[in-house]
Image 1 (cartoon, rainbow, N blue to C red):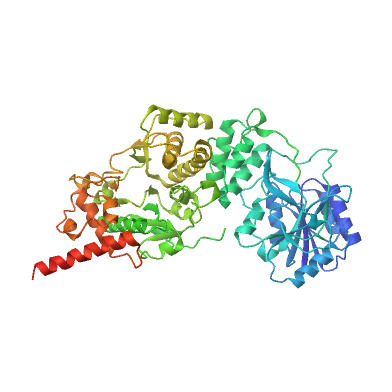
Image 2 (image 1 turned 180 degrees about the vertical axis):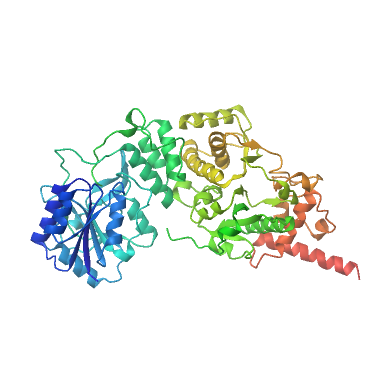
Length: 612
């Protein structure tokens, strides 16, 4: 195998390709070096230069757009083990390629992203990296580490850099998001992708490169604000970064309705109307800008034929003993209801999902609650999971129920088959101030509020629609947390941080599900003597009445409370499912659950002795 490939992406830049290739041939030993040019403009003169004069390979790929796709092709088509990808207007000082080959041979286990100081036109000034700081419409501010001045200094780690020249092993290349288009959004994105894979970006002080910024004749390819913003949103959403940052940066340049359309398209893949159409004003401005996930563990995958006309009940299970117990209770209610057309899908940390039987569909996801952009918000996972790693498995179902774990399914679920979007009734919009604040946020984002309020966290509907509403709710929840609660959490039952996801959900449902309807069949009460068949879904509200999830967690119920339970009655049904879940819990279960189990055991012993 050829050890080194030098590849470049080009678009209508014959002069740049000419001088880059000829400088390589003049000043570097190119024996056994694979030269590759990917042209997404399609220039016959460039083709002739590459193939007839330079002895390189030329790929005409006018079907791909932007800079990300042809850069990916450089790595896919490379013959070398080590790949240098550079712009078609970059020059390398003598000795750089030889030193890179030597570094690669001496460090065969290095799967890091390799970069070096960028030289300016005076051939003295350098930038060693970009600081991850936003400036106007660009993520990154040029910076210089003094260690980069001496080419003989040791490599050092950097946060990110411009992509005029970079290298890594072909086998280590993680790829750009295939949905990127146009120019922008790649810097920082690919560096974070390496970082999340447990690798680094290294600055090799001798890996120097001179980049041509000057364009007296103008830039030959389209540079639009739309493409930059969309790419940043796609990349941030993929990597779990704070999507409110690019929104804040581009709001001054794009109309609000354009921001919304492009954000929806980026996060979900389908926007409001058609985001590919240009708009009047600055939405498609030409701009001059300088360059600048481990696959989820699927414990049980479901064959598509199994779920062609199936539904799913979906919940995220955090790594907390009381919530794990509640998830087991939900499972028992699902088993009791004998739902022939419905799977139970649990999402959550892999160690949590490992505790559940294989009759549950499991999609392992890490918790995002501790990420900076969520600021410890404890309900973040319950909304992020629907578009997180592995969530595409949900597309196998025609309809899904988004639910919390402190819920129960009843046999009435088997007769619950609405075709549209349905939601349970909540209780967070308690005064005019709260309602007005929600309306103000909807207006600020250009969303239509159709008057639906107290939209609870339980949603049922076509899978694509539920996931789309979840994606917009995720985006809005971050916005509310980081902009509306910067100086306190508010006070319940007024404007209150803990229910930010409900405020966001109300806005998203009103705009994206205009035909949505509230139904009493979802989020039914967990107390009282009503018929269990009056509701398809029960939700444990905060209460001191039987059944209370808090009283159960504290061990205040005993087997006397469940003995002789009438499962046709709501409160008894909830109590029975909760007690059934105790048999599934493994030690250690935590003091609260242990107390409940011990109380139940003591009561059982006492009753046995009383019957002797």
